[in-house]
Length: 439
Image 1 (tube, one colour):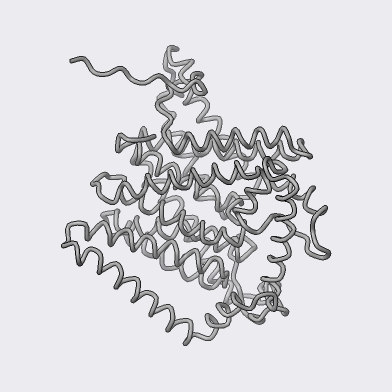
Image 2: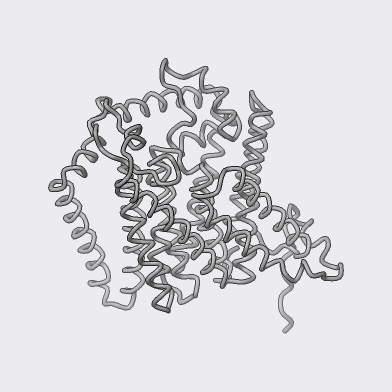
């Protein structure tokens, strides 16, 4: 029996492979190498390169993917890519219907540039999976430098650090480090998705120098994140590392008797909760910072966010179906019409609220669909023996951490954080495609 014919490419991607019939040149044969070098430079430079430098690297990644796509016919879309295209389509419509279309168009271009990076990552990882380790090594190198710079700030001039001490907060006097990112919350958001990746690299890499490198990056990254005293960062780190440990335990115990397979993860969770309770009650700086979470409006940071959220809800009620268009430029133009006096803001300080503000209810539903598809792709690796199993579980844990922090902050939309998220999504898309069930 002859094999079944391959399914036709989606009509949206029929342009891919348009130049496949042309003779191959030196550039074509070196596309994977060029893509890998650009992506490694981008991921290593996230916290260290200027915004202008990051923009050039992002543009280079997009152009490389476009060149590669013209030479390579498109395959099946798959669930993750389908949800991404739906998100992009809603963003286009929201831009066209925006009350500030030019500002929204800038946000749309930024979204397209990030999608170009994601597409190049996915293409490279599908064609040459060994680049996952190299991109991770570059990511950890940049993270290690950032963590060292952040920790070193404890022994430098405290005058600069003092600008992040809020005298109106119950945590007044807390010294918060920020490394090269100039913002402790941004430093925490940058580190959250990298920590589970570092832990998986520690488990996955074989040579002792590689493992020592991953272990050092993991330890110093966790210390720097703790010293940022970002409450959302702490919760995100707990969610990311906790989710990864739980997933690894579930994977390792899948052959155990049913009783212990269910009981051991529960005992592990109870033990982790007990350790956290002891730490919060016995370590004073940790206790003070945690208590500020439940201080309500008595804490200035909480009060600020509550007022911004109320203004964002008013914006959503005014335009619930298509929002104001993507990007912070559009937000900055519309938010002053709804803000409460003296509460200026650059975003909605909550990822779900930001999505509703930018693209309305359809945008948020599409993002939730993408989240579910991503989690399904990662959790499918719990039972398999694929070489992508550990990277996929690390990606799921990273998404859990970013999601936890994203409830009360929008640091995710900064390129230093978001591009690591796109790397995790590309890893999940490739792991699903390798399983032969999705793309």
